[in-house]
Length: 359
Image (cartoon, rainbow, N blue to C red; front, side):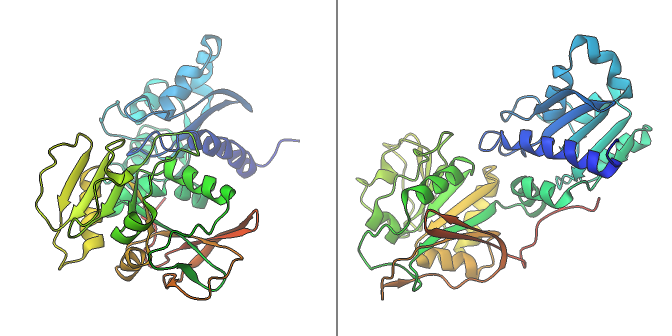
């Protein structure tokens, strides 16, 4: 017996999500998108946005259809995890592709918050006689598109806070390098880095831990490295200044980048809202997502400014008894999981909200 329409829609939409996730860390500043083309209960084509600047998911799905099945397109349904674009960018509009191939039905999870799209793609298709259904597994679809939709709707990166704390609420001890989480949690963090555009630390963390801020324990591109160094007191012998990957140094000083090829110094007004200035600078550079890794003072500055969307908090069983207190933060619990004894809690900032448009 055939499944109800809603269940069938959800089945194919979940496949769209699976395809879309394969683009993590490769498609920014575009969103991750997956598309599936179905004819009479059979998938005849599927695709995803693979790399920024290349064909969108809908194009790859249509191109994957076998020559013998192309005649079925005017009788098929295309499922897409995000509203098809209707603007010319690096590639032509996907709404044009759907109309040119006479695909009569489109099923969408959520709408695109890009101002030029934002429901216009749906309207163009409907005006041309295409049956369009939206809102299938919308919560999951919005989560998948959260980087792009926040960037497009709020003109800032989607901001993730990440820190580890002891069982009694301390992040470490002043001037000491203390590793709290286990190797499995560390690998998960490197996966986050590989899927995110940029990562930020403060002066004390850079000086104490001498981090590399790359994704060496997970395949994928390393993030843009960011460090706050107000008075330029950090020695240039640190890993952050090795010029091995693009790096931005936020300072109040006006300094030349002579001697560097991939490192830039950005002057900020430290008497004003520094997190906001950083977010605006990154938005201007098409950075759609940012991990703030610390330390406590840097993390708290973003929390106090209300500039965060998710917080990934690793809590370990070890107690430190005293030291640097973890940031004070509260939010809606999105997920909890155990990682070989470490506990990861993901909080959402309910006040920040998720940029979206009405389906």
